[in-house]
Length: 327
Image 1 (cartoon, rainbow, N blue to C red):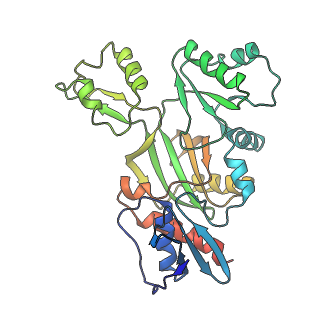
Image 2: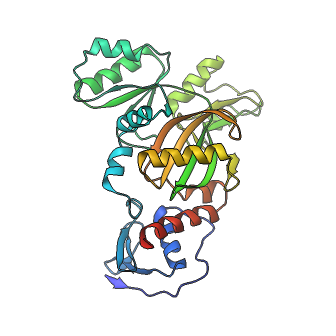
Image 3: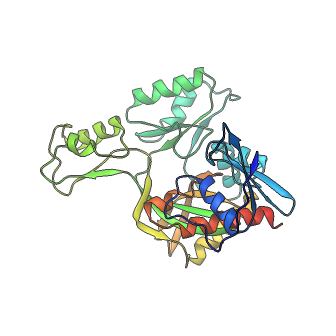
């Protein structure tokens, strides 16, 4: 390992970031912390090889794949398992999405499992118990699709969850040291017709594309992929909601949301987390907040890409480092 000393600067911040590692690297520099790069074959790469940060006799390793400094193993075990997270939240009177679960320890028959799952309308989201950010999520539009996937999980003795498919917009609340860093809207990726181009032409430029989703959207409109999409008409191109530019705030958070976030963090014993929620009512005056998912390693850098704002993410990265090194 080679130690590269760098002078502290008032600001080390780029306009765009592509990884949490880059954010934490620049935040550490701005705080005057010591950085030691990992050198392999004469090269350094903060994402692949990582680096050490040191301050006040504490050290931590950071790379694109690592979790935030100071995150305990029990927190990872808690939030990487959706079933356990859901149970803890429900037991503490937080609202969560209606969920039917199967674990490898369950003794339920396949017939009984089918009955529980199909007690909710199609389409149904089926996803693995472990994971985050839409990993492994599949949307079953027909009972046949769902049965095949459920049976596959069941006979492989693999844990999974089944949830209703809710088309309502959702919000991501990103928290560091129990303080909200920013809140933004998440919507389905879509393409919108101009009355000239075919659906095939429109989706050819889509960043997020799921062929089955597009096929089902066409079916609902009684169109084919070669049809011209009417002007102003939009169709979904993917089942995972993405950041939407229409709503993004970094301060003046509603008191009700602040109180709710504080209670959730205190209940779970966590400091930094990404929270995906549905909100009934409005963000300013929520009548009900429903937890979709918690993420123990939220992506901080995408807001620099979607919203052109590196300041908020940089502030969160700084808070995360200070919480670990300034104890």
